[in-house]
Length: 339
Image (cartoon, rainbow, N blue to C red; front, side):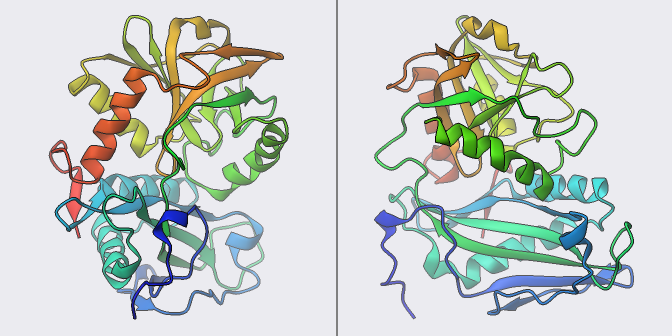
């Protein structure tokens, strides 16, 4: 079976049924060893906590066809660790790091024909998730759980090259001050759908959320992390208990310091002090880096570097990160895991 039917140039970020996905069950206090299946439909109890009480979490990571033909996973141990933190927050059993990474590798191997070729800018997106299942109706942890990983080929996020996008400050909150903002759970995304949709209706790429307590500091950009580059070459990204600790964000923090020689700060980004930044961006697994052209707040658009051109520091960060992911540049130790 070939992949002649896939037009690599037309790939977006859409569901495509691939050959196999990984499925494991947690019963009686432990995970079974898991299996690969062709069936992409889950059969679960109508009383599953995932359906009623949002007891579920997920991850997103990519497999890349490297320059030498091998296959790279980018920091999967970090996704495993973050999923464990999400599981802790929602009273779900941890998926051991080894099982998580092995499941990802098995899914990549079983669907290798779907990995976009090197040079197309595409990658194989992996979606691991844990959900509470089993017969239940009370508000409590589920009696059983499912851990699954499926994959889809995705195209480059930016068709026709990276370009800046404008965002608007939302009056809604993405998460509560001591809530689940730092966990990768579906409820955070459900909460962001309406503000995101309203932002797009008004011609913006997405909404930006302020801190839920004071509404004075930038926290997140849609479903991505914010960063700014100051005029004196500092890389600043918001630090807050309700921000999702992104793996792309963490990687940029390390690369900005070690490779670009920028001073790195995790701190407060006040909405009324945007003048300190010459460039700004959003970062995440899907988007990699989205340059922010401008931010609209109280009906005024604050433009950073430019609404049409990508700033030089953002461009360098992007080249460094994607260069490591696609095996063109040597990454820090342990960042790339070969499948």
